[in-house]
Image 1 (cartoon, rainbow, N blue to C red):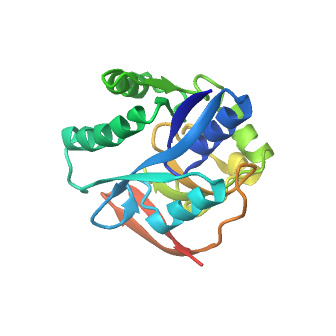
Image 2 (image 1 turned 120 degrees about the vertical axis):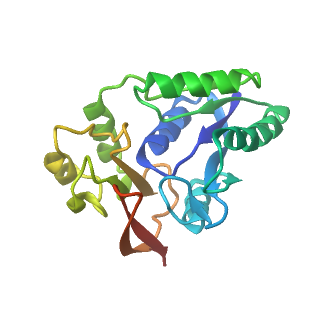
Amino acid sequence: MQKVLISWSGGKDCALALHDVLASQEYRVVGLLTTITGNCDRLAMHDVRCSLLERQAESLGLPLEMVSISSHTSNADYEANLVQALRRYKESGVTSVVFGDIFREDLRKYRVLNLARLGLKGIFPLWKRKDFQIMESIISLGFKAIVVSINTRALGDQFIGRVIDWSFMFDYPRTADVCGEHGEYHTFVYDGPTFKRCLSFQVGETFSRDDHFKYCDLIPN
């Protein structure tokens, strides 16, 4: 059985990828690998508090490896920090990293190339699945996810803080990718079939950044 890491953002796609890898019984998942902004103790891009990521990992029963980067770090610095962590895991027998990517060829090629330099492989359980099928799986399997950030050029303010459900699907604009693969939105998963318990939090204030990104703060209970 191959040892693998899950590239972890705390969101719906990586949660579904983890579920599918576990269900296949072909892999042994040894941990979750995520990137955080070290100077503010939050997940890069999604802006979710690290304490909530830790609670996710605890509920999933998996170790969480947090790679810290500066908010102003270069791509080279990011890759160097990631390589350090991946080398350690390779030495312990990890052969591959699992990603929740769906159809972005540029992103997949970037990941595969960087992993190949270390002698590792990429696994993409959701690759080329239909968007609606992915969302149907997430909802039908019982995953609970909340929208923690949106690109306001793609989505209106009414989507921030929304739970992913059939109502969300009905209201979602046809002009945007429903899975958010182009960065239309990001989510935080707080319950589902792979979770031992539902995570408890409060939805805090909403704030804007970089002209067209809006976030809602999740505060652990």
